[in-house]
Length: 184
Image 1 (tube, one colour):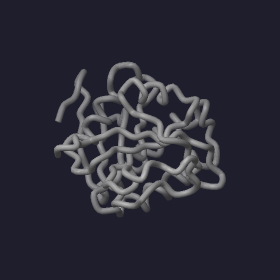
Image 2 (cartoon, rainbow, N blue to C red):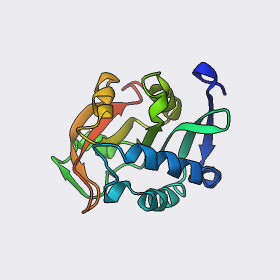
Image 3 (tube, rainbow, N blue to C red):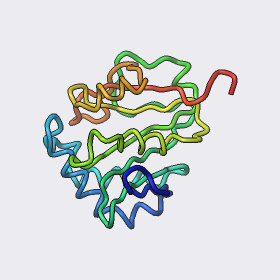
Image 4 (cartoon, one colour):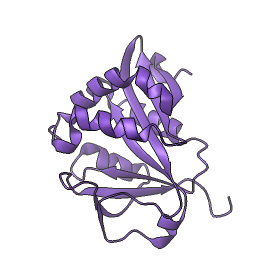
C-alpha cells in the first residue's frame, strides 16, 4: 500500500522480519544513538536484534515498514500480550487489574528516520500497526524525556506508571490506549 508522499507501507508477519533486519538495525542504531537513548545497553544493535529475534516468533507479531524508493525510512512492530500478561521487569505502581486481565497489543518499536520526522509518518505507521487489532488495549513503553513521549500523550495514550524492563534499562513510562469500546 502507498502512504503519504509516495512512501510505501507494507505489513509483515514474524518470519518476514529476517528480510529487513539489517536495514531495521541500521535505522534503529541511527535513532537510538540520539539523546536521551545515547546507545545505552538496552538500545544497542545487538540487544535490538536479540529481542526482535525472540519477539518475531510470537504468534500475531506484526511489522509495518515504510520505504521510499529502496530506503527504509520507518518501521513499527508489536505483538499480542495474552490476558494476565504485563511487561517484564518491575512496575510501579502495579497496572490496573482490568488492563492486565485484558488482551493487549504491545507496541515494541516505532522508529522513524530523523529526516522523515514531523511529517506524520510515525502516526501513519502506528495507526497501520494497530488497525483492526482484536485486542482490548494497546500498550507501549516510552522514554520519559524523549520527544516521542509528548507525542504519544497528544495521540491519546495515558500513563499507567513506570516499568524498568531489564536491570540495565532505564525506567520507562508504561502507556495504554483502548483499542475496543466497552460494547465491542
